[in-house]
Image (cartoon, rainbow over all chains, first blue to last red):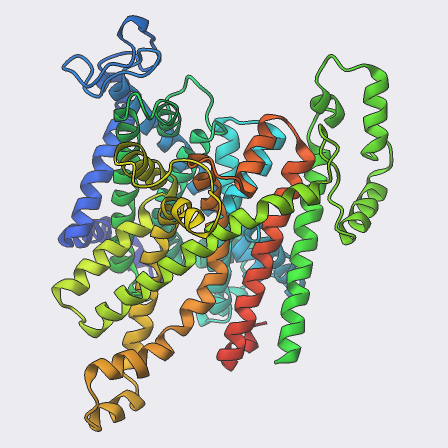
Length: 299
Length: 312
């Protein structure tokens, strides 16, 4: 973690310094073979998600009953499902759905967790106790059970999945932000700010946050695979994104129903999830080791 | 120690209270009349009125909450909307199947994880250590429900080594049925536990009593197996409590994929039929289980390591 910037000269160089820092981190990750694999997988994944509309060879929701349940061929790389939809196109589109859920959920949870955590760590004792109790309560639900309860109440949709993922991971960020804030609240640069009469917003937003955000970003990177798996899992149960939106999970749902007739559907739907979660995990783990080796607890 | 135990259990009770209250209020906060949702649009007004009264929905909200709690204390979680059976009874009928699956997963994953972790720590920075580290990360990352589907496809549908559905009867048949689902949801835990044991083992191996044992010329095998592992294994016991939550979540998928009865299957089936009391009852019981198991693991941890008692 970098020291707070104090004098003007360093402030001028800051953007320059930040950029080289970023390159240094990417370089550090790429040096590790696992990190490199992770970077490549995540790169391909993000590329597919961004340019899905141009990559897909067929309409991912277009039905073609004549060609249903075909095996892999040159027209349909990975075969077709029971409605004659092209599995490959649905897979590519599915990566977009996965990212559409993962990014807002993870960033939303990180932002809210950061805010609440800093308030808990810096605020009065009763507020800290209250927020900690809320965090503990949310964590007391087994994640999937919590998701099922929410889906049962408000019905399945993309927004519900994002909400569930956000709600369940806020405590993770919140607790880390709280601990970091507690550790820093009596350090000299914060005391100096306070003695100069800085507002709460200034202290937390400008001075505290930069010292916490690095750790939280690493947590977020490591959280993405969990989120992708949860979205796919809920869609597999038929409780995630609604059909005909092609999620990886709904692909698996179709494959499960037809497991005896068309085994390739499950393989085609399952492998991308495994590869994507592996890629993000490798990247997250390496990122953690490069950015902050102290987080490396159980290795 | 007793003081810690009481405080920890009180915290667990408080958390459970907040969780249950939040869930209760959430049900009431959802737009739409729950009775209408349950009965569908074609229900007669008389039927709606009688169900409203039966569920106590005509009472003010605080009174509903009080009634809900006093019933819960007596073990009454409400009644099934369709069959009129007690929710407690339905949930308790399914619970043993889920517990069976979870315990089977914990046992095999802990065994294998400890072996992997201990071997890696005994041979640090060798090829096998790196290999185990790689396999551990991969296991941790692999989502349980995808593993469940793929193992169903390969070992049940294609190779027919294991049954694809149900739980079986009699010990051997049950064991035969639990293998694949337990494999699927335990896989991540092999990775977690292997890492945990490796780290704590390396720490223990650096301590004085191990050096003394070495100085006495004891066989390295004996030092690792008897003197180091005994201490290094302690964190595993405590982490299993937290693992309960993950396993309860993963079990939902395993139960659906392998068509096993259990809490998860019960919840999913009840969601499709909009049987809300059963959904809530099952979620409540699984949350209670999780809260209890984390409390117990914290207490065990405090008993083994007095330093951690101060954290409450």
